[in-house]
Image (cartoon, rainbow, N blue to C red; front, top):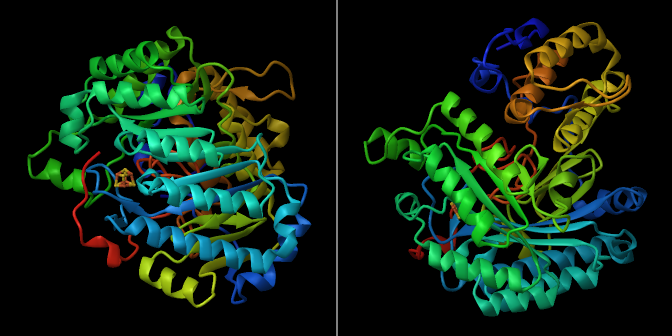
Length: 495
Ligand code: SF4
């Protein structure tokens, strides 16, 4: 679908929260496109060290991907490999070897840039054994300039956070835990294959809060069988009975052929909620969270107090460097995108041969105004804003000014405080922000709107709700589909 600016107008008088963009599902997803790019055929060690050193004043994050899960969650299209009793030591050994190769490539340069954030995402990083994840984290600390100020996040599931793991990972330097809870309603959780009940949640969340780490949980809205009342009760429970510092609220998106879609089609699950119901739930959740003293921090994220900084999430949406480690990890150095081999067996083979198996895509042209604006737009969106008109590409000014007027009139954005001010998103604007981003980029670069150009993608954030494009239910650039390796044969326990 080609987008024109006039397609982006919202009818005055429409319910802006539920009806702003009725054709939203047809808006092209621009997140994968990169104009004028070519595959790099040189090994990582030949091109990365110079670029890494040249960018010494830019923010830097390390992303470690753990593409293993105990079982496949019904709603998740990003499941890759099943974990078993032996995967942890095996995969941690591979990560250690991967880091050795990074050290060989970067030499002393690795410690020359301060690291702003480290993120263990998945998959399910918390499924790693206590000593295995701890030794990988310690190795990262010995190799890179990671300080007490660096945000170090481990993502995972309730049942994995046993006291020995929490202690080992805190001792090794983790200071932020992010848990994919999805819902606190026990019946709904059971239908999704999540077995931990509220009592267990309280115990685990209590011990994580006692550890002194920043504590974040993810919820999904729009699940089959979920009502506005159930979501309200989730929020009450988490706000009043736990000491969480932050909460992500992700909208369910149904992918064709996903286990969820199949369960709905076979009648095992009721239909997920429609767009208007989901939008209303988002609005009601926002109101409830404000009532509990949470600040709307990014479009999908609320925080209580200032301990939660969401450093990694913000960096992943900016032009910071993200160094990827592990099978399927995605990242970038400057404008060179990287994705590590997705097939776990091939990844292991290459790493054991002493090769960093990265697919890298480099730009062939200087950064265009549109590309620059795309980053600016993403960074502003993370602050719940749209950039001031003066920061839009010149070619867009003629159509952007009246469009922004329309969006102010209908209540998607607020008037800036001065001529050079940003436009703050309203609650409706925050709900529609991903569609707004896609529409604007499709209007700016229509020729490229539906082409992926082979962008390597890769996971830049965890499947339980974070960055690089969001939750699996969101718009993360990577897809699933890595091969299932030798660690796929044992049934896992459910969390
Ligand atoms: S939601 Fe997390 S644990 Fe579940 S299948 Fe997806 S990546 Fe694995």
